[in-house]
Figure 1 (cartoon, one colour):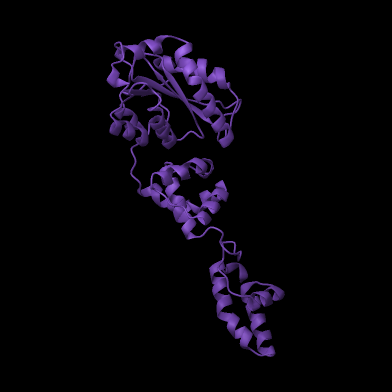
Figure 2 (cartoon, rainbow, N blue to C red):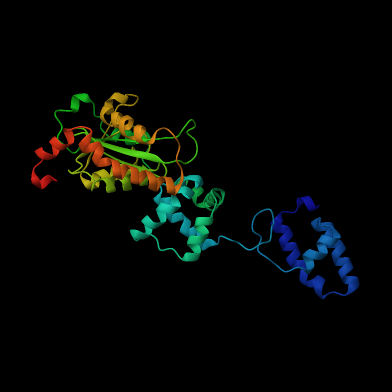
Length: 327
């Protein structure tokens, strides 16, 4: 009989019997206890503790009575960074919190109470996925998104035949993954952007591989180049071919193209800089965490002038040929 009762039914039975059990005489309590134990499946000692206990809200389907650590306010707040990060999984979202929260607050998309902030920063990846399970199941069916195939077809392909003495501002962009021997887990990537005409190269570390971070990095790098970014050519990775970056380039007047799949030579300029700049300075080891992110940022910031002025003369020649109003 006890096995046929669900947790909800057992809770309702306890609520119905508890007051009658407490108000009854000794003999009445014995009869109520025997009947309750037979129906619910509790041992008599456990039944006594349950009937003499205080009502509580069960934490989950397993029936554990304990206070909730993450209430509805925390869950609703968690949805905002999840949406802003293009609905990534809990492991990737947990790694993004340290940089995502300040960015959302800086742009007026989120105002965090200190108590909620502390709970979110202490939240594990498994808890993030659990709290987002309901909204993910609903949003997965209702959200209308451009399919990857349709998105790829909307971005034109650029080949060598399309390069007719490009002026400074048309660039190739790639993401380098110094991951060691195993490309698993969350580790720091390097975004490399190389101007085709001048060879000018800028690098910026990203905490994880994420489309929203790529857009923020491109927006930051625009101020580092001595000329306007007129075009971006990327490979066919999902970190580049996504609605977020396509929409950003469209609104900023940046021509957005892609290389042919499995043709690395289509991006020969940036691939060369991946080897001579990123791999030479950073190597192939895997780096994780904010401390490594800051160290790599200082490294790229200190080396950019050496790379762009001392290693070859094309950058300086291109700068001298630029009109004064374009710098």
